[in-house]
Image 1 (cartoon, rainbow, N blue to C red):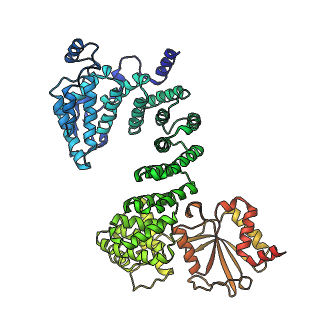
Image 2 (image 1 turned 90 degrees about the horizontal axis):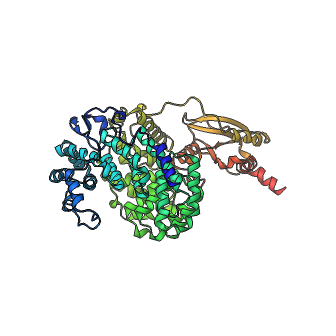
Image 3 (image 1 turned 180 degrees about the vertical axis):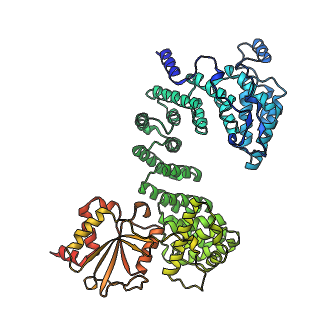
Length: 639
């Protein structure tokens, strides 16, 4: 049975014509290592890569030294002492050191694989500039061609783990994917795929994630999925199951993902905390969105929350964000734990966590209040990047700090003034925009932003960024005009950074409009306007105008728009998208809060209707009657 299965797997996944490599089926590769083929390194000029041009010898031919070594030491491979080459290899500190060492030895297949792996190991520990320089030296080194030729010859006798580690090193070092050496390694993986254990499959899956799609890669992925399907029913080890999930990939068939989810759930009782953390990352990497499985993982995380360090917790939250998991109770428990153990976290760690919460549209009130107090105590501890992040987060989530608001914003002003000379025009614009969302107008950044020449530098921005710049510029201009802050006379925002005025409003939500017609139609002296455009910027679904005498609360704030009819009150009814509210609440986020604030300054009362309230017309009708006609609603209750 196993022999038949092996043949079937190889038949379906190995797209080669014989058991020997057929070089003529490989794509013709240019001998130049041009700019399009670079992955990790940039060169001042193209350099020749000779290792995949010309005639390539048959792989797997052992060298004379390796043959004589095998004759002298039959059956003693496990007990023989480690070669001095390995000790010398581990002392190498750059790829060029490794290549210099290879020139002094006749390498075995195992030593070839370890040499390639060591070259990548030492490279990834370098800084970006140093790595770029060292990889350039590596590609220009005369021994690099020889090492790759030796690797091709050694493939037949190389162990399967050596094959996958070598392929990973080649890809990471920036060897072009369509070069012959990489393609030969891919074909070898196809041929030996049925011999791969879980670890080799995981390494191969990781390697393929960094490679562009091609015929050989598609064949490998198909074969790996067949192996997953074959081994899935017998799998009893959680770590091995996670490896199979990684191998499965994001583009696996839905039926296979469903079987995988069912298998994982059956083993969820055996999850340890590391299993749970890795399972979440694996689900995010494979796109496996399973609420039952995420609920199980959430419960396990909360049970061991006190023992999870910051980097692991960030990984868990990143996985939840990628999987679009929106469990408010879980996030609230995590944020409350962070707030209760606040002194154990550094400012950098808290800022990273707050930024991640903001990306998930979740507002952690206790944590944000605790962080604000720390900022008030020591604002100088914030670097420029920290200040910009904090302003963005607090404005996006429209955080209400109550009595600490002015102190907190004043502390941010204080530290920001020291960084103003270092800020770019874009950073200035975004900072002022975020402050405007909070209804705060610090003079120093405003003066620097609106002085001649600052905003003009943004006019030449890429068109895909200019739209965002214009949105921020329009909001700043509106806030300065409608909020009327007490400031000295300032220049205005250039018209080039203002959005084109809208000429018509979008239609209101059909369900909301239909229900409002019924509610307003039953009332006397009430008018209903649909799809109203305010200040050529704000879309209002409906505006209800009713006599002032029928209301219990009057709002007579000034307006630059057409004033309301004498003795009448205007109520703007909006149905914003759910993303404009903080997760799990009816609390508006920054841009929506500004719209509500500006509508109020223009003489409107505002009523926000969430998408969830639209799901039931009966519930929506009661909600609208209660908030638009409270006196009528109370009379009905009394009756």
